[in-house]
Length: 576
Image (cartoon, rainbow, N blue to C red):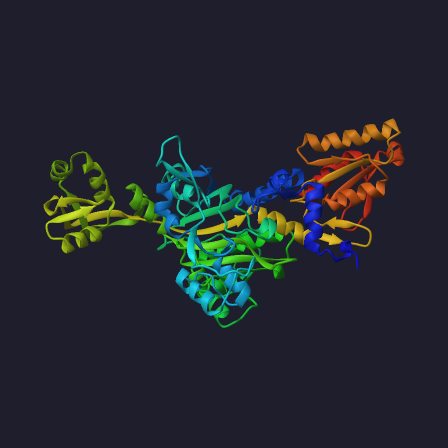
């Protein structure tokens, strides 16, 4: 059997992607670097179409409760101290003591022993490796102890040593830091979704699977803020079949029992049975389900897998991964849905000393006994001098119960921000007062998509082979080129003139179009099919007689005649 015949779908798709300009490995002329891919002309257009579609589903259809911002890729170290990434954004690695190769330890254990290892501590993984005699996959040498490796890319901000910054591994922190500002701009709305589409970087240990796992990529995500006590009613009428719509879910408890197939629940069932902890979480999962369908995947090709506690990120109390099926690797994640609670805002409030709460006004004022921190700024000023302001700001943002506990556990001094102040400089008093509202820290649910994965998944799903051609059956909305225009012959001036005029009409309204005069018409159709162009318009001799053209649909090869004047609105209607 020839090498060509033995190629699987993935290899053929990767060849097509490189040859026709969807994507290829970055830094090719220097031998390439794993985890980095360039998007070519077609890939860039397709990615833009996908992000535009995401924007439509998550923001433009929700302008009453959502908006979008853009924040920097590089963040100061303090941001990631607060977020917990400096401590927790790690993977376990193990090094071969003979050849020096480094591997991700949990994945190595899973591949070799076929057991679940994600979330295990380094010492646990070391024990498993020793007890099972695992050796280096490259040279067979002994493996050392497992240690953690932080996935943040480190840099410096400006020319100053110690002014450390990191490339963001997600866009989320920019939205948390800007929450109070955006909340004010949006006139105090809650619930409120803040979306962002942007580049992120993760220093993956050994990225594989081509476009599936990258070191630099684009994330489209939303942080959706709401009052945990009064979250409001999600607009379920905006998703397919409302609360009766179905979600395919594989629960964590079922995974522990060895169940591999998801079960189907209505959105209403998922909420009422506590399968999904928040109605807003269920809502954005349903929006994600509808969005992924628009990329060409059917309902049975996607489901939500609930992560086990040890698999969840440090900020999450519940997480679902949205999985879709691809040809080579089976089920892969395209989005994550995390219930982040008040973790992020609370942490940034603590580390920044800024008030990130929202004032929640009561319908009627009520009398309440409230605890209040009383600060003697004069004593703190005399004690700490120039450091006093930092301590006062920290005390003002602390919970009164937290301050009370400090006063009870320490004898002569209270330690705040690492500095000692006399106990008499601060006290907690209880007062009865008329209260018009309360300060709350909103809770957050987060849908987050890797855009390059969506590009690959859409191509993988669309790639089909017929007897004499390759066809990318991309949905017209995300196809990089929407229409191709062909003059049947190139030696007839009138036919060429009309074809160019039609082509220009599409360009003038911002529709990506292709004009091709090379080769027989059948070859031109083949080339257009291969890059996913849904509609091809051919200008022929009949066009000169009756002002009609042939429009061919990619998937069925069906051809119809349409008036020249009607062809633009007809195609626009089809692709929109």
